[in-house]
Image (cartoon, rainbow, N blue to C red; front, top):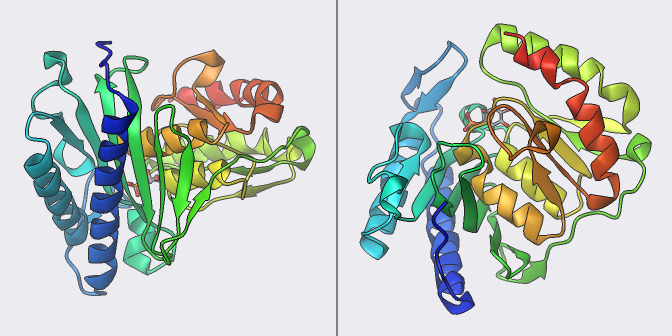
Amino acid sequence: MTTHEIDQDELRELEALAVDVAAEAAHFVVQRHRTDMAVSTKSSDVDIVTEMDSRSQELIASRLRAARPADAFFGEEEGAPENPAGSGALTWVVDPIDGTVNYLYGYPLYAVSVALVEGDPTVPGAWRPLVGAVADAVRGSVYHARLGGGAHLRGADGTSTPLRVSDASDLATSLVATGFGYDTAKRVRQARALTGVIGHVRDIRRGGSAALDLCLVAGGQVDAYYEMGINPWDMAAGWLVLTEAGGFCSGADGGPPSSDCVVAGAPGIRQEFSRLVDSVVDIVRQG
Ligand code: LIP
C-alpha cells in the first residue's frame, strides 16, 4: 500500500470536506424522500436501489470531483473505482444511502457514508481510511474522524462531542449489533451463526446500516458489532470513526476487515468477542 505523507492540517481540511458533502447529501435524500420513487433491484429481489441512491451519489461525486479532481472515486452504485488506486491516487469510498431498505420504508435509520482512503479498497488489507464522515440523515448529525485526530459527533445544533467507545469488559453483559445480507441462503446461514452468538451476549440489535452500527459502537450506544458480507463502502468511514474513538475493527482470525467478516467493538471485550465470532464465521462462509 502506497502511504501518503499527509499532515494533520490537510487531514483536517479533508475531514471537513467529507462532513460537508455527507451532510449535504443526507439533507438532500431526506428532503426528496417520496413513497412513489423509482426502485430497481440488484443482486436479488430484496437488494434494492432507489433513484435517490443514484442521485445522492451523483451529488457527492460532483462535489468531490470539483474539490479534489485528482482523487479516485469508488461508489456503491458505480462498481469498479475510476482512476484505479493503482495509480497511487487516494480514493473516495462512498455509500450514498447506507440502509437503503430502511430509507424506502421510512424506517428512521439510514446514513450517507463518505471516506477518503489510501491503497486499493477492492483488496482486503491493501487499504486504510484517512478521513471519514457518516451523516445520520434522520437525526441531522454527523459522525466524523481523521487519522490520528480523534472522532467526534457534530449534532444537528452544530455542537461537537468527542466520541468514546464503552468500557465494556464482560461479553455476557455486552450489547451487540449485527446484520443480514440480501441472499436468502446466506441470510439463513447468518441466522444460524447468530444462534451461536446470542447465548453469550446481553442482547442483539439489528439496525440495518453498518455505517451507523459502527458509529454507535464508537459512541458507546452498543458495545460491539459483527457482520459477514458488507462492502468497503458500508465500512470505510465507520471503521475510522470507531478506531479513532478507541475501539477495534478487524476481520475474522485477526485479519483485516473485509466482506468476509467485520468484527468490531470496545477494547475490553476484544479477545472474547473475536474468539466468539471466529467460532461461527465458517457457518456463514459455507455457501
Ligand atoms: C446494508 C448494510 C447492512 C446490511 C444490509 C445492507 P446498504 O447496506 O449497511 O449492514 O445488513 O444487508 O448491506 O445495501 O443499505 O447500502
